[in-house]
Length: 73
Image (tube, rainbow, N blue to C red):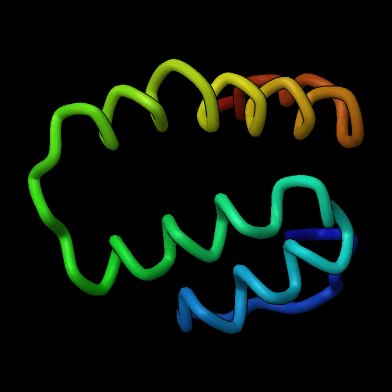
């Protein structure tokens, strides 16, 4: 998360950092972090991420950071 100016692979820590910037989405991200540690294979949960969380995250990233251009090879 660039605005946090840090990186961690700890899902719980990252969810807490995320929650500081997006308190209205904090509970959902904390739940996603728990499921990341303990996947359940629940189709409804997966659908909620694919249909809700992921599009919002992509849109928010674009809003804050702009569209990334492909790197030249």
